View 1 (cartoon, rainbow, N blue to C red):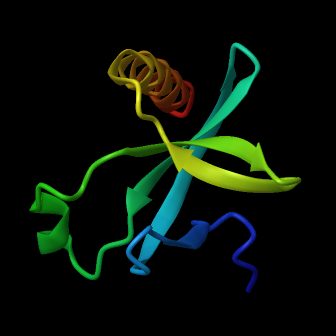
View 2: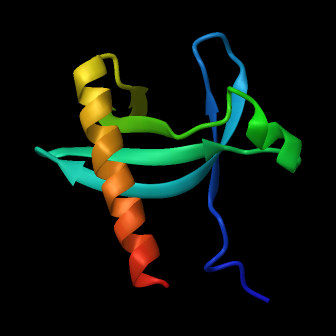
Length: 97
């Protein structure tokens, strides 16, 4: 059986060398910039209650010809992109109901 429509996971390494597994949720373009939304991968439902569990938004940047994912350092940018993702996710949910 194919996992073609199942969840997609990526593993990122932070600046301290720690691996973080994230589940891909969605992507969007805003003002020429690509943003991607993820949820931290969890072992069980109890982890979802942790304050570390929440939407992770990263932007795609090109550095030395290589595509990388970077955190959003500007609080206003983060809030705007979060709102856009929430609107998109809610619209997708309404279409599927």
